[in-house]
Length: 217
Image (cartoon, rainbow, N blue to C red; front, side):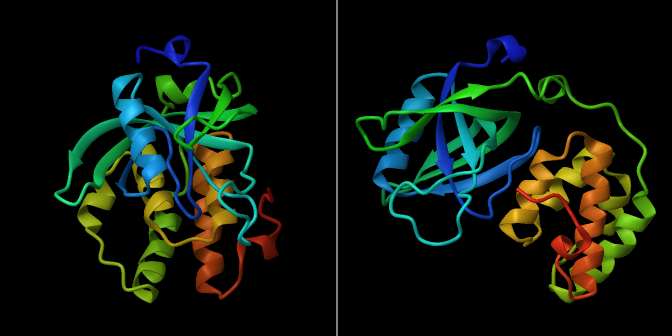
């Protein structure tokens, strides 16, 4: 993939609540359901892209629940097959997309969409390192990680580039699906960092970021 022009018009999607993939982030997945095994095989034979997207309704809605309008496509960058037939893959985030329309189900049962990449021109090229209040974010993370018994390499956190730090924390922390979606849809790194800091601080106060008028989707 050399740029946005190389991104395909249609991609398969993998709806998964609570799973967040961001551009240049890395998301490990354990694939075992038959239709997603077929999806992974087809992706490996083609452009190696899978669109990660969250269901928009937390209630059970059958096999194909409604999904948010924005997801993130990832390229399969590692792949292995287990003895019991599962696939262990890693997706590396390429670009966010907006769903233009959902296509008919593939014969193997997985979902496909026509993807609009135009709203996210900076995703492929990478964002410039934007200044944000890193010290405030790290202070919040120390309390949040302690409350959730999450081990952290604080030396590595201190040295990580801003985009990598924000993406890694946003992806690994057990935030609510709506908070994950808000982080995905943040227009740039500065806004994502600000929102991430707010979510962490509100969690320490025992409040949802929605109580502080965070973006709703």
